[in-house]
Length: 336
Image (cartoon, rainbow, N blue to C red):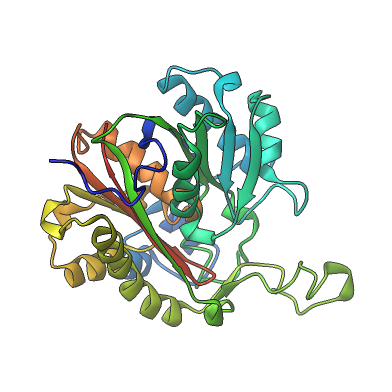
């Protein structure tokens, strides 16, 4: 039976042929945070499921993590950097405001033949980038597309704000997309945004609205989040995105082999899976070890799920994420 595919035959069936991930070696535990802010291992674990996260060295940038993850993905795909035709980097913690971190990454990787650009959908960035990349991969001009999520959130957090600083970690994940033939690959995506919630997750200062030289309230240069609003949004957005993409490709929840969600908070994942009526063994989480790595969390988790033998050829996989913007979405693909 032909697999329903919202690509409608207009583009080659693109799929993931190489994966890579990288996290810094520096481990920061809940106990470490308890020594810096008023919190505890019990509180963090109970509320979020997080036990530890990775922190980049001071001289390591978002592009550096992206390069290591990308090198792994390119090698697994059996390609060289010169074979990459497009590089899409999802990040909300860029090396610099300008130029693009994708361009910096392209140069460090040696992808001299690739067009490179950033996208920013915060924690939902990589699932958006995967959708964009799938629309180009396998076409005559862009045969091989590298889709990267990379973040160094430890630099944009207020280390005195216990409501946010304990939640996040640094890391990167990457995937190479190319034509994989009919019957496998990315079947479709579903994306949504709600700009009325743009202030729920934001860094207030540093853009043209409040330039750094103009003066600002202390703390506005750091990541800020309305935790209650995020919870209410996420527990609905996650299952909505999963249902949305499955409806778009004509598949049922019962056909899904594994869901890889954004690794924000174990309680959000549990609530979303309950909403979907699915057991937790139909999902994969690694946030216990890495915390919330924002736009990098989904590809890092996908890499580990594959390594753990949880993803096999022919499996129907759904990746779903939600974050600032507000933005949320999901991709569905048959593993090659």
